[in-house]
Image (tube, rainbow, N blue to C red; front, side, top):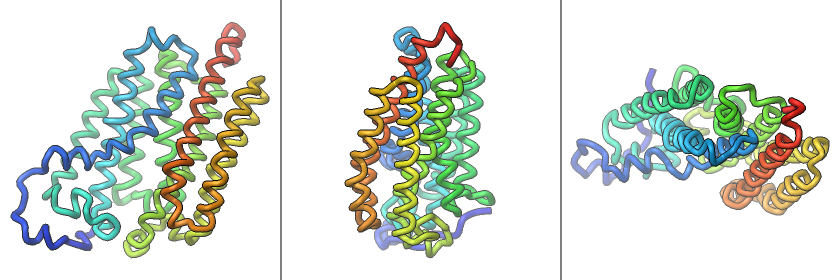
Length: 318
């Protein structure tokens, strides 16, 4: 099953001769390097939280960063752009496919090739790394491609992205550094909590596409709940897990780390207050300035687990 034809064809595309193949800069834009940071950061958090010697395991760290960002995340972006080309024709007509700079079925071909390359690269990461990569790839295709197309429902689609980009990447970093061992309940708890928070971050990205989503039947949360309702939901999903993380760190005898996470969470509130008043206009503002505070708290938590791991390793707590 394929997606509907493009809803909009730019005049410049109609007048220009058809392209044989996309330019390299168009391919780079298609793979969206700006989106690679979140899973790479989450993987790095998992590596730090493992408590293992970073210097002795630098090769695994490098392999994992390449896998989570330029490979898995890039492939998911390619898959999404191909199956979203009809929506992008309304919301972002200058994207590579609706603009005509990515002609024919090049987009699908690149998505498949990058998926295969990701799986091949993942074999270098051991059984856990390969299994995590395969799950992330499956989620990315399920998110975008019919007949599943989780993106058609904002609750399921955002959950799949959040789990893949944050929780799965974190746990992969920890497990790979531990030689495939179970990451432990503390790391699992933080990874899942930050995945819940990332659900709210994914909702922020949906505000720019409300019109196209509504017209093409994509039930994003701003479409389902309205801009105000989705804004409240996004803020709640982001703030509550951070407060829970701070409480857990305090309970684990890490008061300074708990205070830092709570302070970073509170620093996001002024941005969110403005966002709640003007959700469509301020969503990008929260993404640009609030999300860095959120992910900083992730790394603070990871260093807290690293400290706790060093103190408790002989007791087998982690």
